[in-house]
Length: 273
Image (cartoon, rainbow, N blue to C red; front, side, top):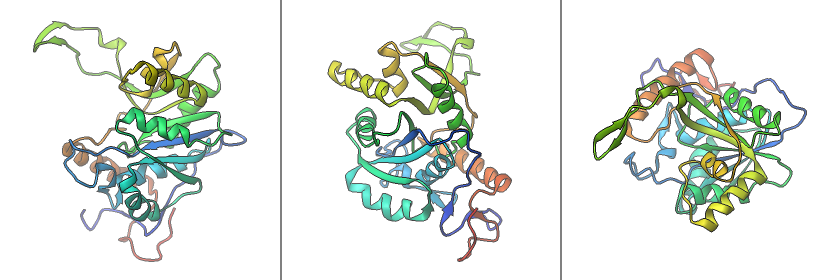
């Protein structure tokens, strides 16, 4: 990182967004249990430093800004819990209580584990991938509001309309070119009623069904899930090329918003935002 690039202060803190609800009704489950094999770092991509903080910290800071969230569960592999506590959580100052749940062998198992750690007094749960460090509190709040305000909706996910031409391919041969106006690219956070998502995960477990995201499990059980337009830069860091893009986008955001950085170089005693 160049000398002119803003860096987080010694203990970065989240900036709160205006409150829209009288009391928090949502627990966030941050899935940080992946091995990051495609990324190629033995620490796991969620612990790789991005603009001065581990990737998972940026997700936590954004979620902590959401007034609808009252508790955060981080799902982490048991053998990496010390890394999570010592190298990530110790470097951010969060207003919400954070608990840790053990990751499973798959993402789906990890989410189910996280659901088991959600305190009983929360009606909604927001599932977020730790590897999406550019999530915004505003996008999360809009997903939460969509589920909270409509009893006919079982879930809402951050997503963006597809801009690429799509091809249905079999054995590298194009079968058809579907109308892309029907297609959206799914992201996280994904917000659901706690009971609805738990029931969908239980049904998937009993049927040995593997979904590609949590929304697919709820859809399979007949739940109505809607898309909430999210910033396109809410990318997932999966391979090293994604890291370069995320770094550039986050540096630009730090310069424009000033969330948690010390513009003068991260000196001790700097005041967090």
